[in-house]
Amino acid sequence: MKKFNSVEKAAYLNNRTYSNWFNRFYSIALSRFEWINLPDTIDERYLELSLFWRGASLFFIDDVMGYLALPLMSNSPLNVYGIPTLRMAYSYGYTSDTMTPENSVIIYNNYTRTPDSEQIKMYSLRLYEIERSIDTNVKAQKTPILIECEDKSRFSLLNLYEQYDGNIPIIFSKKGGITGTINSIKTDAPFVADKLQILKHQYFQEAMNFLGVEANTSEKTERQVTDEITTNMGSTEASRQSALNARKQACEQINKLFGLNIDCRFRSNLKLSQLMENDGEMESEENGEI
Image 1 (cartoon, rainbow, N blue to C red):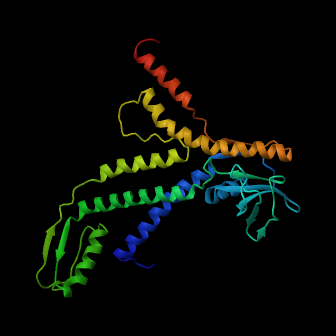
Image 2: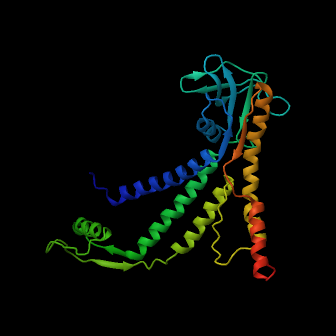
Image 3: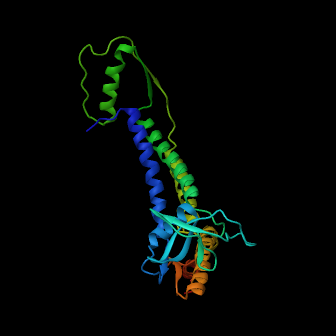
């Protein structure tokens, strides 16, 4: 197994940290919605994947495979509502015939008709920066020094640091292995990891709100009141409805055009009204009303 040097290790952790955040949000985005009564020939995951990356999917009937929902490809004139009048679908080794509103329906990802992928990339990058900054700041508490040495001793000192960085309890050095003058300068890096952790939670909540998923990561230790819950959940509900209503609108058009009974719903049993009702009951108990 190859042993990474400090630069390679940092690059590896950078890539893995970004990938971890992106895949985390990606997985949530693909599993948010449940499609009801979809034809067996349509893959729900691939439908959501198309909406995530492309912002639109085309629902139609293929003469051989039956009902399909594949990524939309269109560069045609738009009607008065900005919807392409000519459209095609494509996938791995597949391109459909040119279709129209008379034999196909466009499913949009949200009311802005944009994909989620770019926003998720942005949030993943910000969270990656914060998390790696936390790692660096924590490590700076362990090694808050800058070492000045002669070039001939640099390699020996690097080997010693690798042992120190690996938390080896006893470090041995060859006698006479390090020569010349060695100076150390304390950098006295301030500890800010706790503040960065709060910032990370805030960005995480913002990303989840964008996806329409409840994620109250408030750092307040006391119980939040109804107004605070309502404020925190309002943006979540708005983002959720933008995506959900776009899908439901497509369901209505599909059902009307093809005589189906398709529906879409958000995979969550948590309702804002329930939160407010429960909070009100707790306030009443505290005031001695129950």
